[in-house]
Image: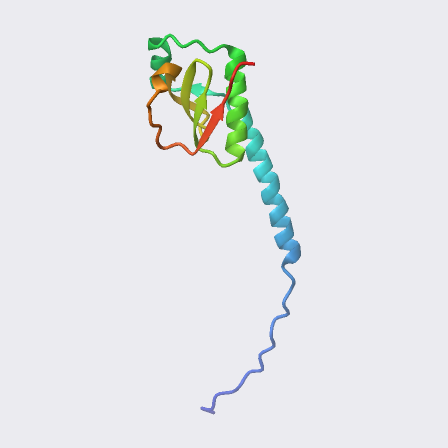
Length: 129
């Protein structure tokens, strides 16, 4: 028996270009992102129990067209990376979570004087014309 190590001739594997696969993955990711954004825009606006209680207590009335406008602006804010936003209306102020399309709390506009809002990273101002 021969105890010498026999050297094998290694043949390097041919490298293939990964650019076509990377391009396919990039376009697939882009279409997924587009699909995700479309799904998010169709998610209905919800009002938390806390926010509904505040709306009722403070007798804040917001009509359906204004809620629709709020949701549209929340979707725009979401595309810009805003996750928690302050929505300022003529007679009310809302704190909303754009990621979950949820109104977190509400207060009358006069209550917001000398008030500090924390944990928000965007503001939406909607005024009646």
